[in-house]
Length: 443
Image (tube, rainbow, N blue to C red):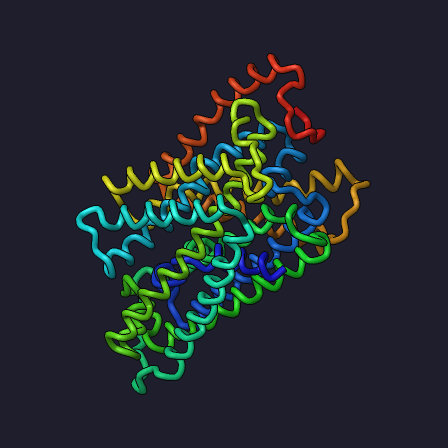
């Protein structure tokens, strides 16, 4: 279970906690509202985790969300999700995180004009290779990085609260802050920072006693992350104040500069490198498992269905994932527009399928009532309904915020439609109808 909690922490606590709090503060008008938004983000994530815990306990599978969607809506929906995750959500996240790593690594070891892209590509290549060697070999590094993340953020909190300047930050009115719309936009950034806890579903099939331990792992992981996020933002508010956070482009670095000087800037750079590495590694692990399940169910991507027994890893899926991520890094090296563009590209597609997974809990309870459910979400149907309403609201908010920026991600998602048609044609030509996994899913 420690390994699973480490994966959750490694994926969730990424560069977002060092960059997005300033965007949250820019949409809120007081220190109290900022802390309330981060607490609300943790509560919403816990509600979602309870819904996922029921699905994981009832249907443990290496395909995670993909498996739930196939059971609930059929193989067409599963195909579109697998395609979106492979080309937009997971590989886009890996490339974005890798570029963040490259930007900071280039400050320590500059490699010329394209130094950030080179560092980014090296990070993806090395972490993919470690996972190809084997899960046992890579988990030690994963657990070390996750532990370093928690300890490093604890140090940031301690510095902010214990070494804050005696003069309190000046209160100021933040232009454009306040109101339900501003709070909703702030929650988009908050929940983006919390995003990733659902990735634990992809290692459920490899976890001993998953039906009992996964619930504890999810609640423990999200609970710990919530406490860390609230504490970190309390440190930011104590040192910089809401207005100072809103005006900052690097809130963690500015805070550490104020309390520790140049040494603080250097220490936060090293911490960010460790945190982003942990996040990339966790994303590589879970993304490859989706591609593996995708290949088992659809002949057109059947080459992804190979699993290396000795390494206990889906080698072909890891290689394809790395190739797509490296291609995105190459494109990013030519024209990088920053984290905001990545949010525009990823968010609408991500929240669309998150909403569908939440609705699948209702569908599967009705369609498969006799399946053993060792864990049932409390206060059904209120709890999953809240999760679905939140996901729908964030889908709308992400579309409203991104505007034209969402077109790229949606266009790539749409490219999956002709591939789905091609897969159906190829499946008809195979004796087994293209079902390699043996699961009794509806076509």
